[in-house]
Length: 239
Image 1 (cartoon, rainbow, N blue to C red):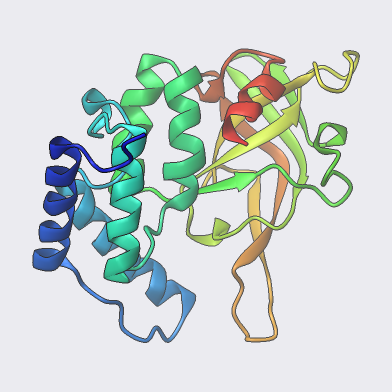
Image 2: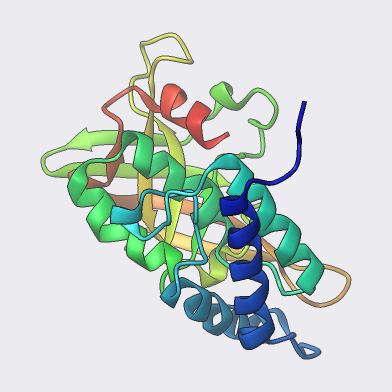
């Protein structure tokens, strides 16, 4: 078995290496998480301009349609360069691929570009105080109303929620269904009325993680991903 790179793969490795050599910016020492996020946004936007973020995404959505081998090559060269990891990791690795698999065309057009260039940071709102490893036991509720959903409940351990524009959220939409079949997958604007982020302080004085509380938060219909009560199947893609 010949495991050496093809000529095309070797050329791709050179392209990645040359771009990083010409554009790499090593991060300074950050005084705060906010400084790190601000610096990371600029670096990720620079990468996105040349389509080096989400390279495995389809070209029509800002990626390169890269093969698994090309993704491995890119990751190898990126690690070798010691560059900072992209700041919008939840968006790139979790929300984006889920939207590609389950989102409507309007959802893809609205959210994918700003995920790639980090103009909108994303967070993940799955865990709850009493719903960790048994995620389907979650208690956050989303009541269907005309034009959207009313969200009530709590999430916890939400990394970087204080910087995020949107969060991917699982909420119970059918209390009478078996617990894995009554959950929906919602994109929650963190700036929506009724959505409150409370930082969880660390011994360092910083707060990487947060609690998020929903008190009659209003989520529009177009923020439902994958269909009503179909959230567990959509979450499987995320996970």
